[in-house]
Length: 458
Image 1: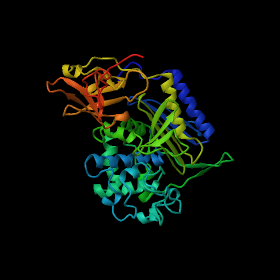
Image 2: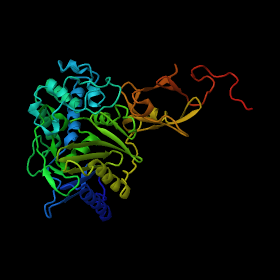
Image 3: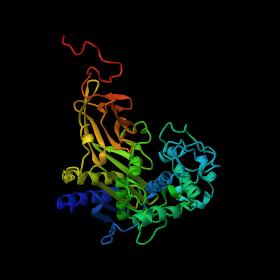
Image 4: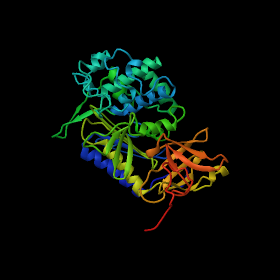
């Protein structure tokens, strides 16, 4: 959306600077960089450093750890959209011989496969990847801890398998698929598997003293699809915009929306969090955020998107522990959303409308529940309760003159118009639910019939 409100207000910018400065100081990190993107444009960047005059900028690389996982998930979803696999497929269909081939691709994407969280010792994040030359070295002797599909259990090993799956189906290394299918089309020129100058160094800060120790940086080998990448605030802002809106060169909007939808129940005790297909989901007050956090020794990262507000924020730091970039990024989104709410696009009438479709609008009744049917974009419709709680959904128009539910209770369900012999409209059928123009009118096609005595008083 183009408007005269692209630049942030000075008061908003100062609040963002204050949040980043506080995070760097209280988190005791050598440096921290933050950025905010609104409607696809970076509207603010800021940074703090322990070295005067040497603050990083939005083009400085940091290691992003598990924010690598959404990239790997995008590669898998591309294979699905191309018809090369199905998310319900067992892993063994495409990557045989792992010993855990009964888990499905969807379960791996959503961390519900029951796999171990980490590979066997030594700790994979602080040791060279060549210590784990094969998938058996990554999975160990007891890779399954929980029944597949029963609970959310975060698994780095699961994303190692997904990276190997991409290589097996695509026939090229994961890194090559990443570069040609995501990085190059989206223009993420500063996102790489190895550090490229200028980049931050990784540091450990002593928990009880203001002193630092450099962290070793290792190539993760087979574990790379779970956490290898380096990136910048600018590149991650661009990636966040893609995750919000899609890009037909990489994934269509419908598929990224699918990735953002909850795929597994939250873990007990964390009812404000969940996981989609490669993306974390959280509730912050009345705001829903999607994205991912990341960490590797020496680095912390956070990326959150508020699709409704058209906002996203990225925070990167070069410390093993200290600040929590995910919390800071969520705060950056909140600051802008509260100080400068999104300006809605102007209302405009539809370019054209089908009179037959227009005739379907207005009140409909499911029993005695009153609903309203309105025309949406591209011949789609919306069905919403007119009073009290109810099941609201948007519907996409199909070529056979039906509609498919996009959200809510009726997601995936079919809405169709049922006509009488004279072609007049009898009722709407929505997954066997009958909607009539009047509540329980005589002669209407109400399942179970209508009492012959009709409506009556006391």
